[in-house]
Amino acid sequence: MTSEARSPESDGLRMLAGRSFVYALGGLAYKGVALVSVPLLARLLKPAELGLLDAAAVLASIIGLVAGLGSEQAVAWLEPRYKNDGKVWGSTLALVAGAGTVVFLAVLVGREPLAASLTGDPRNADVVVAAGFYGIVIAFTAAALNSVRLHGTPARYALSSFLVVSAEMVAALVIAWRLDSPVRLMVLGWAAAAAVVSAGILILHAPRPARPHLSVIRDLMRFGAPLVPAALAWIAGDLFIRSSVARDASLATLGEYGVAYRVTSALAIVVAGFAVAWQPYVYGSAVSDAFPRARRTAPALVALLGWAATILTLMGHEIVAIISGPNYADAVHGIAALAGGIAALGVFMLLGALASATYGTRRVGVVALVGMVVQAALAIMLVTPLGLVGAALASLAGYVVSAALLVWLTGFMRSDAAGAAFLVSIVFASLGLVAASSLASSDFSLRLTAAILFTVVAALVMLLLQRRALWVQM
Image (cartoon, rainbow, N blue to C red; front, side, top):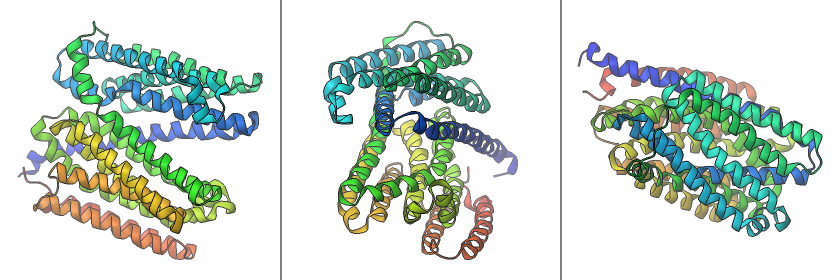
């Protein structure tokens, strides 16, 4: 195959990498604004109020996922297959509104039991209702950001994400500063601010909605609904691990797990940026092109995530010291496994989109649920004897099992050049993490030297993976 024949695909991969980078920067800005607000809220709210606010945010996120019914990926899949984008968007907004109304009514009816379960006090039912309303807005915000992803630019997507979280933060801080017992109004302030910004984003970027069509709504649900359990599964798995740590280890260990999790969230932003760019890229491909494109992308993705996870592990002591101080120094022992899990999640995202494009989305949901069960089972088995390390290993195992299942279900690993490249990248990432974990308690100078050497090796591996001998021949 000539270089001329390969250049369109190479250009596509370079475009994918560039878009992933900009989307990740948007996620970093979003996370940065959220982190800045934490110390401010901690000074404006009582500890119990801050805990109640966190519970409301988690509930709203879950409601937003359910109300969205996987429509973000469904729209990315359907738009290239429908000539009328307005019909797709009109049906999408109607679907989100209908699903959001049903979920909100369910929250309204069960507000007191939900409040008792989530907060320990049924008198917080008004906060639960506010969280239900905010969850509907989150679903519409996701649709608005999806319109930028599909019809705008990566830079506009990053800016839009930043504007949403900034408006939410300003509204919440003003309410917390001016009012007593402000949690319910803060959640409603989040909802109002996000709704205003999201409406502007939809007007600017979404195709003009046409009348909803029942057939399009059915197609949206058929593709998107099975992805909801996949998204919820990882939330549920992490919650189960955290509850196991609190129950079977100690609250101090849970705090260390939380710090290690925050350290690896930097890698999660990279994965999220890739997923935002990758899904439209593969969904816009012909089914016959999706598989080879995924096989070309996977080795470089695994190698990059493996390098990043290894560097995070090697520099874990310094990062933990900056983030949380010496009281959480033991958090470093969970970074390697948690970072490896996020790298495996990157493979799951890549292959999940491929499986959705070629086989449908039900398999992806089932595989994610299997990963959640693995995380829960191993948390029960490992947290008591191993504490923080056991919790991190349980998280890692769930992601690895799910990614491996998708490798098997999609027939991704084959005895050819692309299969060899994928295997090389997995071995490289695994060896790097194992070596970094064994050096995690060494002197800084040794860890820094290892980080530099591993970066050089990573560059050589990336060059090797781009050689013609390791690409799929088309």
